[in-house]
Image 1 (cartoon, rainbow, N blue to C red):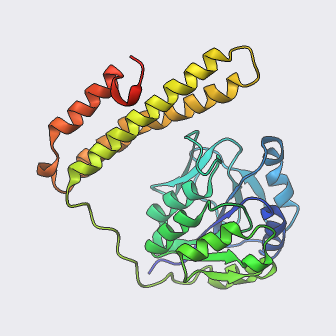
Image 2 (cartoon, rainbow, N blue to C red):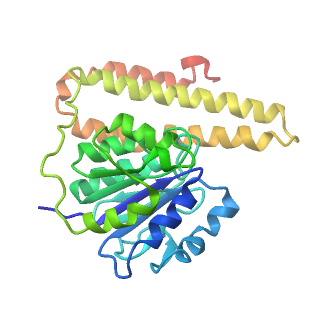
Length: 296
């Protein structure tokens, strides 16, 4: 049975204070890899490994694309890049769209880690605003992993850990000062023996393909609007923000068309249910720019 040997930690507002308590309680030679995502301003995030390394005995460094999981190392998502775990315990970085208004995002890491690591994973969500990490924590629990949160009553900003508890009622809660010892107790032990069943494939697989094409259309339409605003406001300080949002939307649309749709069509359990004409019609609309008011 797989044992817990990977820890993910997600935090936002108030999270660095909680991390100080957690990291200071972890011993040298920890037999687990620790992956950390914190919402921070760019300049502050650049210094985060140095800050975390000073809190305890474990070394800390920004993740490097292509590196493997490393036990005993605090691996921190760099600013402006999502951190994901891929097959073979390899870490990747990518500049995908903002998730919950953040990049890196906790959910992005948790979704990927849950799919690859399953019951090997311990996910920890600390202080923060809004709900980043809640959906990802549910995916971790569904994959057989273990979910811990900072007790909302102990957090500077209780929304993120509370959102996890709302989605994963069985998540364990601890004050920040007790999370380190709790992790030490769990690391090396076998994960839960029961996995929550995955959601079944939809009965009408064509609906999924149509939804994906609709998402592409809407993203491209949004990008066109943002590009238009950027052109109208050229020369002002607002131009960069509109262009940045346009680039994010186009990046997401391209990801769906280049990776998600091909994967779906290869792995769809019932190819006969896919009405080819629907996908082809949507693609023609995307390419022509006629859908959702997208300029030609």
